[in-house]
Amino acid sequence: MKVTKSGKSKHRQLQNEGYLQIVSAEQKEYVKVCEPARMIKTDITNTNKQTGGLLELILARDNLNIAYRRVKRKKGAGGIDRMKVDELLPYLRENREELIQSIRDGKYRPKPVRRVEIPKEGGKSRKLGIPTVVDRLIQQAISQILTPIFEKQFSNNSFGFRPGKSAHDALKKCKTNITEGYRYVVDMDLEKYFGAPG
Image (tube, rainbow, N blue to C red; front, side, top):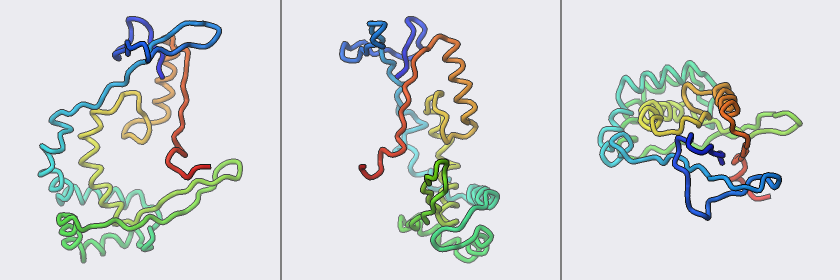
């Protein structure tokens, strides 16, 4: 929740009585909850309008070549099939047409990810899924086409896993918010939200 200042919020404030939130006990006052900007359907995000061309853009030779170069540059471990990044080009030379046709026909199925555990501080570990290099190529090709379409619709206050944004940018935004007089922070971590209960 973002505590808004009267008259200076760029967002629409919710006026319904049910949305008023009491501030801390010592202040005994109410603040308004800022309603986040909604993603709107435009020509940019209307997938019904663009469906016919998106797949062709994803499977275009230039897009796939760029995706290949990015996967190769990032290197990384192999997936469950143990294919290495250096083995991807020979595989594509031999199976390119069949792979592309299976995607066009809707028959392509990504392989399960290989699970590894990465050690963290305090003796804990974080689970990591490693897709096969072929799946990474396809994911990269899709991302290159969809990211510019949907990136325009994301909040300017969203910094995680976005191109050209980092934790340093998030800290700069926090500093700006503090300078502008915001005093409350709500910290929500959805890390384990979709995990098993317990």
